[in-house]
Amino acid sequence: MTRRNLLLSLAPNNRITIALMGVRGRGRNLTEAFAAMNDVDIAYVCDVDSTVVEPALKIIEKTGRNRPPVVADIRRCLDDKSVDAIVMGTPIHWHAPGTILACQAGKDVYVEKPVSHNIREGRLMVNAARRYNRIVQAGTQLPSLPVTERFHNYVQEGKLGRVLMAKVWNVQLRRNIGRKSDEPIPAGLDYDIWTGPLPQLPFNRNRFHSTVNWHWHYGAGDIGNDGVHELDIARRALNVGLPKTVSGMGKKLYFDDDQQTPDTMNITYDYGDKIIQYEQRLWNPYGLEACDNGVAVYGDKAVAQFGHFRGKDWSFRVYDDKHNLVHEDQHDGTSIDAPHARNFLDCVKSRKAPKVEIEEGHLSTALAHLGNIVARTGRAILLNGESIEADPQANALVQRQYRKHWSTPKG
Image 1 (cartoon, rainbow, N blue to C red):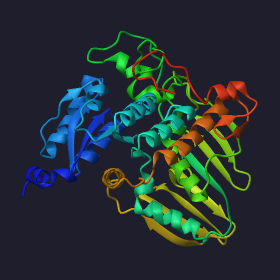
Image 2: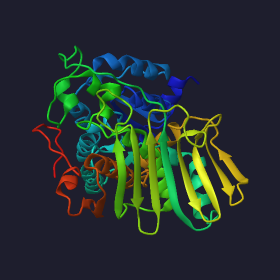
Image 3: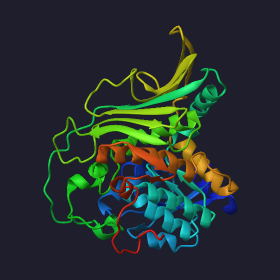
Image 4: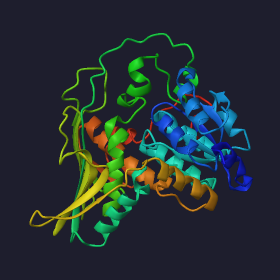
């Protein structure tokens, strides 16, 4: 049986119809993951930049499917009653607006990380998922790997002794993006929809595509881009939510370019009885503990390290109090996107909570936002729920201002 016939042979009520929203970068990876699933129909490719859709269409064609319609306006997909779910690989500033609109339209959502541009948006996403009874999976995909589950089980079974602290590091070599002037909007781009509910800035290639995350107006820096993965692993390992206080520093020490977000950070999340520390250096090629992005969970008897260690896939290793390697485990080398996509699709069918349900994604993303608030204000902050006490400047960064636009989140 050909792949095309296999796709068609599955019972219609077992199939899920999706729209792919944003198909460049991570969106292209998601296109590969979801197009590989036999129980998925792809109704639309939705992207505001017509110059980036061809690779995604070719990925879809390779699975034996016909090319779906290409649209720029997500409302076309939301109005289509046959669409069950939106798979969102857009820039960060569209994650919350797109998710909320999809929930309101009765669609389930897979949304890339970080789930939001700010803490308030994340809470609005959780509220929308609850109000409209939608399945929303956050795109921090590592918890869907069996090796990650085994790591968390190892920690929580007490094998490290009394666990008091975790360290997260994001230590890798990023690039200088230089300086660019504003320019006319390029052909093929619907810049109004790309901007969405944000106050519109002039078009600039250093605030677009691969550089968009490094500008506060649109992104959350690398703590939100990459660090949120490991913050999620650490937070789950320690079984904590939001901290009581957040302190530390974040600034540009190395890059002399258009980036606004920090290349260097050292943030402490204090829970009272436990601590998470986050370290970021984006200007060196040598990593930390033979790993560029990792997590260490410290107990009074042993330490467990999780990460993408040199020469290995995602794995973890445990050292006892005499520095002996006492346990080692590794991912099997298959795709890290496919299990998370599969989990989402299964939950769309079963209506069970996915591996990284939006509340979990929101809490981990909020840690990244809190680190950024410390970096931007230059001082420690005290939390009262999801608000910041006695600091109007810091508390203003919990949310953002919007322009009048059809995509502006309500509430």
